[in-house]
Image (cartoon, rainbow, N blue to C red; front, side, top):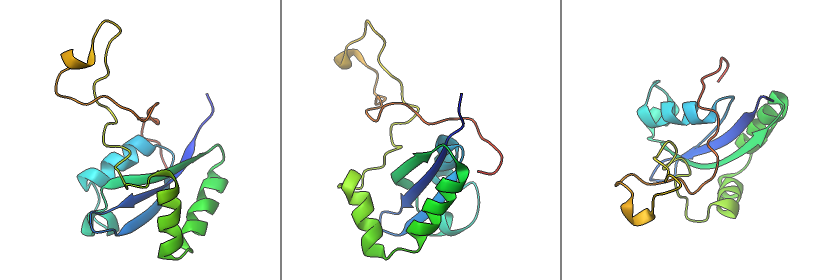
Length: 128
């Protein structure tokens, strides 16, 4: 299986933005949400994943991160809103219970099912 890398943008409820790159998107987003490390995202409460892009080559992911970090705030907002106009937390339902073949939505437990498709790698890798 080919390795993937992601460039992503996290946002706070007040609109503060953080752009990063990782080889384990699910794991890295959970670190931001849990304030695993002190730093910018913990200080400014950037806990919502609002945009991401996948790459096969880490150099392209890093290049994209640097490109976005050099943009104006308005251009970053335009990128986010081109795919996520309501600034929803894309990772909000990651890891939620999914319905089994014989279950109906009205029988489902209170947990929400994912509507975003496949979950990125949950395995932490070095260099995240």
